[in-house]
Image 1 (cartoon, rainbow, N blue to C red):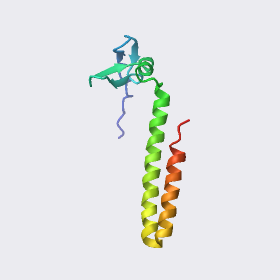
Image 2: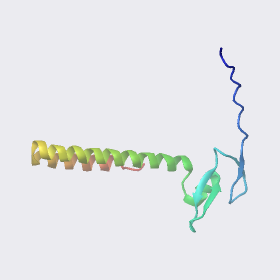
Image 3: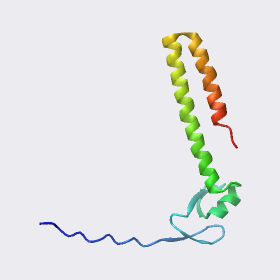
Image 4: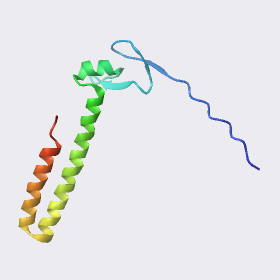
Amino acid sequence: MEEKKEPVKPTKKIKLNCAKCGKKLEQKEALIHKNIDGKQEIICHDCFKEATGVDYKTFMYRREAAKQTLFATIFCIAVTIYAFVAEGWEYGVAGIFITILIFLFSAKVK
């Protein structure tokens, strides 16, 4: 026999207030910001832009780009070490040069 499952009821939406401007926010829109004193506050996107000078979408884009640059650089360094050990110093020097170029071009901020 199959048991009938009851539909899942949506959870109650939690409303939060921005610590700086008092604006009411949905839980998914709220941002946790650490102020100068080290205290965490719940703020809105507008107050985040005022506090940091950058809107939140740009901040997240730059953060993700920085992660990708880090992973690409670490991968290139590992391949360079392998090439140096397996093929010789010429390939190691070429790998270092290519790693530097990849780092410089991927870290370029528009």
